[in-house]
Length: 518
Ligand code: NAI
Ligand code: DG6
Image (tube, rainbow, N blue to C red; front, side, top):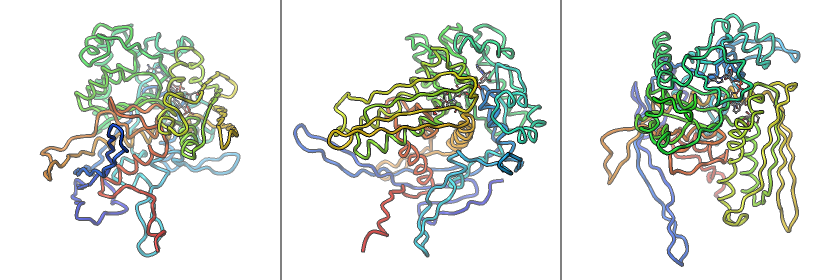
């Protein structure tokens, strides 16, 4: 049953029915033109949209590719612990399950101003619209390694032994489905894990069908309304984009039939999900979404999102660089070092897989630099280096060291050094939850535009590429031809303001004029 909302909107533009929330919303932007030698001309622009949110969430499945990995086993144990309201002993005392690190579950957004006190009223993001509760997710997935989830969480060395004992029996029943293994795509040092693989060296077509069947079976077995699939398996090498091979949907589908060597396992998963209309999210950096996949998703109006969880170092980077450049400080270099000792680190010690991660970690400042032509000439860019080293001893406790070097007033310099230590999987797991919860929500939101005062006949969904997920991702995929936004603050504002739009509330401007005017 859908729980009663924590608030309702009182507006002639918002209509609640048992099954939907319908909203008429005016989207206001500023259109800018420039004549040959004249100044810019900024013109306010308004577009009227109707939004419709289906209120019934239904039963939702989350299928993880790489379920037996550090992230997969950690997020599974975490959800079980929350679902059962577990409490366990640690050397610091009792610890209760929580969803810290999940922007949806553990952060709040402003609903408005209390009319009696003038104070802000804030609500958990999860309560802004009907969303699946992570405790209700039915979890399953695939792994090329056969280890059941209880042993996988031991191997991960992330969770406290006392917590593990409380979830062990349930985790022992969870066994990953066999998966697709094309050895060329992940590091050679992963070979000894591959004991749970689908037959057929490059039987891509059969593999697409098998994954589709797995999704259908999972849905039937657990009586689910929908399944969201998320790749949290090893980082793959980039696939070459080859005209005639993976550049269009048709070519990709033909290529899958021939088992071409540039079709990666993650691309096979994405195609299977698109054909099954299951949203597919890529939590790793490789170019799973070759142009043919994006076109296929658009053709099927299926949802995809990626790439690469933005957990620690990059999240700090997309906040700090935004701050520096918006403060008028000229960032001139970033040196980012990481060392970690988990299996992700082991896989990334191989050059081609490291290269995928280097690319996704490096592009995160581009738009912020490009937005400020006072500090940067056209084409000018801060130096930026990314180093990752495998250091088995530190396990999942990744170390990230960053030095930001900047030019300040009158030729002065500012150096900011950061040393970030944390369990990588405990940062990534809540992101998996956020990605799944928001992706599921997007399957229930539709819109139509008003043209010349009349609404279009039909409602349709958002674009297949879910750029609304950018806050959780290092290298956000956006609809073809649209800009990438890396600023963490802007990414969060996009998310929260779209939620507000769906209930007919204007974006938060933070002007607080009511407190500033006489
Ligand atoms: P992990 O190495 O512990 O887990 C990956 C799992 O994927 C392994 O169990 C492996 O057997 C499995 N696997 C490999 N290829 C597969 C395939 N084709 N099909 C099914 N399973 C397959 O890695 P971890 O730490 O869980 O990270 C997972 C991914 O998330 C990595 O690509 C990592 O780079 C990425 N990531 C992790 C972040 C973090 O903070 N932990 C942040 C950003 C990205
Ligand atoms: C070392 O950088 C390993 C990686 O998998 C990262 O831990 C992961 O991509 C998280 O990176 P970040 O920059 O979001 O902390």
